[in-house]
Length: 213
Image 1 (cartoon, rainbow, N blue to C red):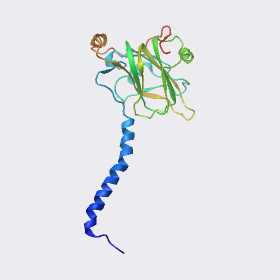
Image 2: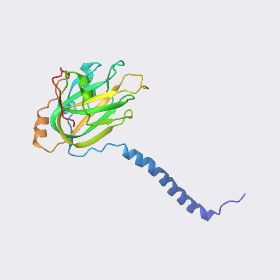
Image 3: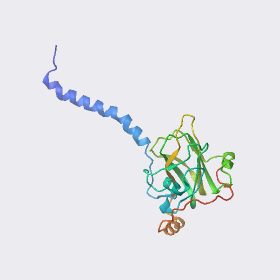
Image 4: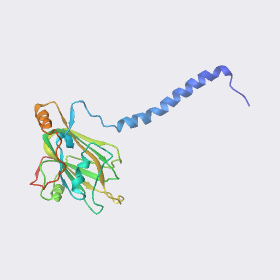
């Protein structure tokens, strides 16, 4: 058996180190792609501390529906296992929004997202509208976002079509609605929400008026 001369050892170590770094680059790039970048002037209007309210949940315990917007991923809102089309509608300070993000606490199928001026009397009315965007294959505990041209709205509706492979109840950890926070309109609205609103956040829905194209 032949052994490498000792003077080659530093060179081999250097080559090995370079190869290891190159092998790590794709993994680090993939991690970066999964991070949601929130700009400094973005305001999450959906949160309870920003005046956000859950005004409709198709099932589950309505009194804890605020856990989907409490800015704490450790708490989740759970829909009923028997709910065929889990639907959640969040009200926020009316503003031009440009991003929706979502963190689920369980396996989730496709979710359609609608921007509305008012909420529907019947959630099934949403199925006749075109969603602003849809999300599929959401990873449990990881934030998924959708960006779009700024649109004026006062409500965001999320309506799931769970996959056939999904057996347990759907849980939602966080819903976020982002707008630029530099305008006096947003500053005045946020100032009016301190202290945070009470936790009886579910009320009956009025008439539908779609914003989505």
